[in-house]
View 1 (cartoon, helix red, strand yellow):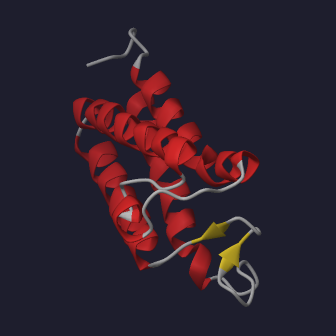
View 2 (view 1 turned 180 degrees about the vertical axis):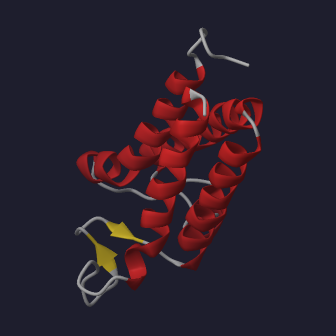
Length: 134
């Protein structure tokens, strides 16, 4: 198994964890907010779940599929996080359509969008491993 496939498997686990947050007792408060920051809805859950399945499939199919997952996933998640940082809503969960531009405190926007920025950046950085790039 190549490094890209191992990283894609990590993303499978991380994204399944994100998809499960709403369904683990005690993680969300009475308002449905996880960690005091994230209000995850069915669109977020579906996004994380299907992204996790994509990561798993890519890891199991081939090194090239895993590398391609890291590039495409990384670009889309990083762009979504940066958009959320700029306007308060992202596009992957349709937030920009359902919520529009939100006037939120900048520190809140950083906390809310940091996971997508980190996951996207991490995937793109992992895809740049030229020694094992397919």
